[in-house]
Length: 600
Ligand SMILES: *[C@@H]1O[C@H](CO)[C@@H](O)[C@H](O)[C@H]1NC(C)=O
Ligand SMILES: *[C@@H]1O[C@H](CO)[C@@H](O)[C@H](O)[C@H]1NC(C)=O
Ligand SMILES: *[C@@H]1O[C@H](CO)[C@@H](O)[C@H](O)[C@H]1NC(C)=O
Ligand SMILES: *[C@@H]1O[C@H](CO)[C@@H](O)[C@H](O)[C@H]1NC(C)=O
Ligand SMILES: *[C@@H]1O[C@H](CO)[C@@H](O)[C@H](O)[C@H]1NC(C)=O
Ligand SMILES: *[C@@H]1O[C@H](CO)[C@@H](O)[C@H](O)[C@H]1NC(C)=O
Ligand SMILES: *[C@@H]1O[C@H](CO)[C@@H](O)[C@H](O)[C@H]1NC(C)=O
Image (cartoon, rainbow, N blue to C red):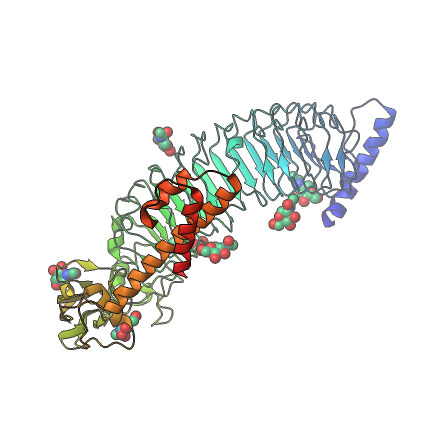
């Protein structure tokens, strides 16, 4: 409004005068009232002019026309008829709810058209007819529900299409047909539940695809076929996106990939592995917990890796092996306790490192950073460590840093006798109580020196102990726990002995009985439990008899219903009931019913 007051006296008076003149003479239409027109370059700035419609008469030689921030509601066909030199038209921030077909016909020089932040719900086919030179179209911030087939057929020269912040629900298959020169497409799905793969097929020239706010949980396989020239893929604010299928990015040869503010809980290594030209990777603001070692090696040209504001607790050793050009790592705002030098293939290539806002443990694992402090750019803030408050590498002289960043090698304290006995079938817990700085990690090896994991009957539990469940005689032997940290390792061996049960007893039966609370392992019992055998046998016999009798009853009703059909019944069941031969069905029935009654 202030601008309005400022400009109106100067231009307004002039324009009114000119308008008056225009009425009497046949001179070309002057600058419209309440617009500001450039003198040298024929431009008209009608922004904030409270226009309810496009001014009727506009200077025909205009090259730029700014109609933004008015109250224009409709555009009639051939609304701008004679402006054949117009190159830039801005209709943003109006109240346009509809654009008639052919509205822009005649604007044959138009390069940039902005219709952002209006109330468009649909772009009718033919709305952009005649705009053969159009390069940029911005329809962001409308209420567009979908893109219809052939909407852009007549603007085949389009290079950039921006359609952010709409309520797009569908993108029809041929919506982008003809846009073979399109370089950048900015789409905002909001209510779209899947990537419009088929519509993208027409965009062979696309180099940048920016997809915001889709409601998709999975990026499916082959989502971006035919986008062979695509260099930059940007996926952001898909709050439900939890995974990328292994072949989801097949066909792409990207240099930049951004998947921000989604719901990925792990790095989609498999989907990335063919992106050997990737330079820039950004997985920020995803709940990714850790990065596995040796899984990113295919990205051999990667220079920048951002994973800011996630839930990273650990970056495993050798994570960036193969990535000799990595010069920027930004992991600020995570839960990392350290970042060790051996995660990098060539730590010397690193120039920028974002490590601030992590709860770092300040010990010898960060010494390499202290040594590199003058050659590293820490960006937003220096690394800080919990124990020392805001601890800035640059604040301490080199000699002091070496004393601050210390480690203590692990020491396994004897916590348990070196010999542990367990009854067969019971559980033994072997302890490994290790201390050191940083807190050592504990691994267990079995008597065959195989490393034991956290699954299985014999498993290493998170607190460092080893559980041997349902101990068996063959489990006996020396178990080794190895506690290691950045400063070294320590080993302790515990001998496990298993007290075997009596050999006479049948194994299975015995182990069941052991599991019962009342039974005692020392109780002597006969080798075969006669009662159990009897019960088992009679259960089997009963079930046999009952199934036979059910069959006979069924056959009885069937034969009554069908009359004289008996032969099949005899053949199937006689051998076990009675040598009744193949005589009358009635006799057979009597015999069977007797049999059944016996059972009860
Ligand atoms: C057009 O006018 C508006 C309001 O007076 C002003 O804010 C804007 O900068 C102008 N634009 C150009 C390109 O001069
Ligand atoms: C799109 O989603 C928003 C919420 O995300 C909702 O308010 C709106 O009604 C939806 N529009 C359509 C057309 O479904
Ligand atoms: C993100 O994923 C987690 C499980 O991994 C799920 O519990 C949560 O609801 C998801 N968030 C959204 C917005 O879908
Ligand atoms: C992939 O892109 C790089 C440059 O970004 C280019 O040098 C290379 O030839 C492309 N590879 C294929 C197969 O298109
Ligand atoms: C890392 O990202 C954060 C947030 O985007 C930024 O403030 C910081 O400067 C970045 N650090 C580096 C080293 O680029
Ligand atoms: C470790 O946890 C297991 C159960 O998960 C327990 O039996 C064992 O006593 C614990 N060890 C220590 C040293 O607390
Ligand atoms: C333990 O440390 C020694 C050197 O002190 C080293 O040779 C050995 O490989 C280490 N073992 C493990 C399992 O880290």
